[in-house]
Structures are given as C-alpha cells and as structure tokens.
Image (spheres, each protein chain N blue to C red):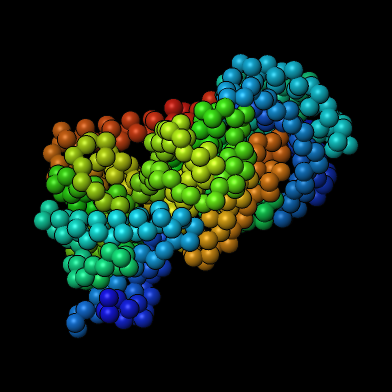
Length: 357
Length: 213
C-alpha cells in the first residue's frame, strides 16, 4: 500500500519534469471473446492527441453454431495473455519500464474473461509499480472512436454484442437517449446466425449473404418504442421465416433492413431532439456498411455529420482501454489500489463520471 | 389532394425525425401540415406501411385523446396515401425549452388520463408537449396505440423518465416526481404504483442494470 502510494508521488514528479512529454499506457481488454493488449501514447499538450503504437489481439473462436462459452473463453485468454502482452510491447518498440500507467477493462462483460484481464493488469502493475486505472469498456469504444474520427461532441450510437445505446454527453456523464429494451443488435445477429449454424461472430456472414439477395423483403416485426428499440420478437420471427422455407439470403437481407431501419429511425429521433450536429457510430456492428449507409441518410436529413469508427478499431481492442485510461489519468490522476481493483460484470456506462470532458 | 400539394409549398416549420411540418392554412384558419415523407433508408414496402399506419393511427387517437381530457391539435384533413395530416396550428413553446415543475405535473396528468382511457402515447418526450398560455397541448400520436396492459403503460412512463434523466438532468428527480404526482392523481395511487413497479422491472431488465453506484 505505502509503497504504491510512494510510487504515485514519484510518478507525479516525473510527469512534471517531463512536461510536454508523452504519457504511455498499456491497455488490457478482456471483456468477452477478445484478449487485447495495446500501447497508446498521449501527448501531454493542450490538444491531448493520441497515437496507437501497437494493438495485438487474441480472439477466442467458439465452434460453429455455438456462442461464447465464458469458461472456455477465459481459458483461451489465460493461454494467450503473456504472448499477446509481449508482442504488444515489442510492436510498440517499448519496454515495460517505459510504460507510465496500466489500464484494464473492469466491466461490463463476462466475469471469467474480465478476471483474466484484471489478473494480468494487477500483476504487471504490482510488479513494475505502475498506477492501475480501471476502464469501462463501453466508454472505451466511445473515447477511442472520438480520438480516431475527430468528432468533438457527437451523438453516439454504440452497437455491439453487449450494447445498443444512443448516447450524448451532458453534465459529466454520457446520458442515454435511447437503448434496446431487450437483446442487443449484436446478439440479434449472432443468435440468428448461430441458429443457422454460422460461426460467431455472425455479423459479417449475414452482411455478405444479405448482399447476395435481390432485395425481396420478408415482413418482419419493426418495434420502435419512442427512442427505444426491441429486437427479441424480430429474432424469433427471422428464425421462423428461415426455417419455414424462405431463402436464407432474403431473410438475412430483411433482418438487416428491419433492424437497421429501427436504429436509423431512433437515431434520427435523437438527432432531432438533441440538435447535435455530429453523429458517431462505434462498436463491433459499426463495421457493417449497410448500417452506416442508412445512418448517413438519416444524418443528412438532420444536417449532422456522420463519423464511423475505422473498421480496424470497431471491435473490442486494447487501444480503447489504453486511451480511456490515459484520458482519465491525465485529467484526474486517479488510480486504484491493487487490493481494490475488482471487476463488474454489470457496469452501466451512464453511471460513470467522466472527468475529462 | 389538391389541398395537400398546396400546403406543401408553405413554410417549413420543422424537419422532424418522422415528419416534416409545414405552416399552412385551412380555409382561413392557421394550420400545420404534417407529412411523413418517405425515408430513403427504409425498404419501400416497410416504409409505405409504417407511414400509412402511423398517419391513420395518429389522426384517430388524437381525437380519442380529447375525449379523455387531453388537449391535442384538432384534425382537419387526413390523406393516408400521401401520409399527411392537416391539423390546427398550436402556437407556444415546446416543453423541452420551457420546462417547469408545474408543467411536469400537468404532463403527468395527461399521461394518467390517456392511460386511464386505455391509450398509450408511445412517444412521451418533452419536445412533444407544447405550452400555450396556461394550457398544455400534447402532439405526435404517431406511435400511439390502445392497450390496457400495465407493461405498455410502464414503457410509456419509462421513456419520459429517460428523457428527464438525459435531456433535463439538472432537475431530473424533481421533474419526475412532479410528473408522477400528476400521474397518480389521475390513475389512482394503487394503479400508479403498479405501473411504477413495472417501470423499475423494465429498468432491471435493461443491459447491465444490476450495478448501481
């Protein structure tokens, strides 16, 4: 304890000595299928620009037709963690001594997976005496997205396996303007795909198949409740349509058209309500081109500029954790004692205080 | 039809998320024309169906709401094919920009009256209420439907709660409490409590909702 606190002071002095020098963070992502390590650099000037020096991922792949098994995924993470970590340092051309802080994904996510990342983070932090910074995974998607796209005050659509939320920043926190009332868009695509025997994650395969359809639309339930959406009925109806003899390409097409139109409508509602002039889409499903093209139309109508998180950083990665830890640490100098560094499987984004915006 | 093409040449009041609102007149009375223009991002089949369905529903339920004691614009003309409604022009300010606790309570009263009459509004946000002098007018019944289910009422209430907690976060608690007091006065204490319990249940069902700080 005392030693950790002593080290903190020492770090503080070093920061002052090297004013203007870059702050380096090792970020560890471990919420679901991805174990990722990344070294990210932040310039300590007023603009606080960042640069991703390395981004290494080990991805757990469940067998075709089944989803993530939390225990199997965590076993995978435990197996790959040391090589992913070593590689991320090597690719960045840095040694552990160069790193200033350690960021780790503290939630939300699968318990067994989160714990692997946390153990790695605590170990490295304790052994090398580096400040430890817990990061909300969802916040990581947003912050890395704004860093990479240059959006300043966007309405955010966060779409992934764990989230489907429309957010805007106000009064120190990201506020939810709309979200799913049941499953997420990622779960909708994955669960439909798994029922069809695809390998998870299924979004890419569904997008591909939908592209092969000649545009025959099968009626599926379109459920918008105010600014919120619900996908569970749509999932059931799509599986039923596919198993009752509709062509798979047409069902994939109709599934995308219906679910993405629901998102585009709620985004348009939120844009109109908040009068935001920027819109950013982040999370794994941000990689889908059809979704981006629909949102582009909605944004044009509402005079907003659309920013899409670069495809390489749409999915889970260590850089989102490293960058958010840097922002947090640079602004608040807050760190967590190893003894108190727990993980939270359920940790809503709208309860996180953001000290740097 | 003739009328509708004419009105569309009027001044655009608002390009909303769902419809474009034009300033117009109806035989000398100031009116607005609400046109649900096609959404290019939606498949045409789906889009036509949604726009027509919402137009017809909106016009019908707007009239039903008045019977329940909720002030809403008078409907003058409906064209389901063009997805257009011509209705009374209500001057005044959106509650989004003119929120007071008294208005919040009145909003709760309106929600209670609708729910007691079996009407779910479906889009209870502060931008859909207009303060007009001392009166409050409720707009946008496009997502409205009939239901007596507690769950549906709770979804309605959860939305306004979400709006208070995001767009009006400084007065969130007071605003929602005022809303609930107006709501409970109309619905009866027991029924209102049942709906609020259901709201809490929906929130618990939400993603990652168990963790509270």
